[in-house]
Image 1 (cartoon, rainbow, N blue to C red):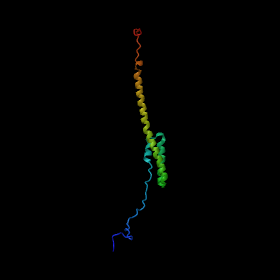
Image 2: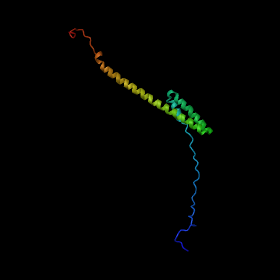
Image 3: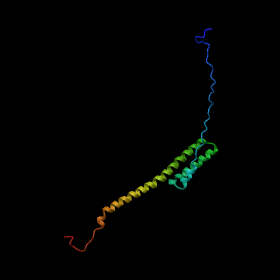
Image 4: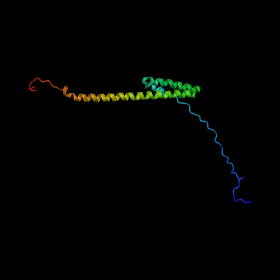
Length: 131
């Protein structure tokens, strides 16, 4: 028996690999942002956006409880957008108002310093200064 060359009937042993089982992706239920909406409604209700966000948050929670996950995601997304707008508007507008007040005070103080000569003009009874 000559074994110096490979034989054609030689086949590699089959490997015993397990095929991966299909994974089931379970997505988490959508968040309804209800606490954020309540906070925006009570404390920072800028242009009633907090109230609108609260309405969409309640709708998202109702849809989540009823099992309609896609509608719950849509309402949750709208609630998040309205909450973000309400929070940003409630933070930006007071800062903008404060900046305008500070700028106005600075402008008025410069105006007052420039017009000090007008307000300190003295009317004297003697005509020596006119001559």
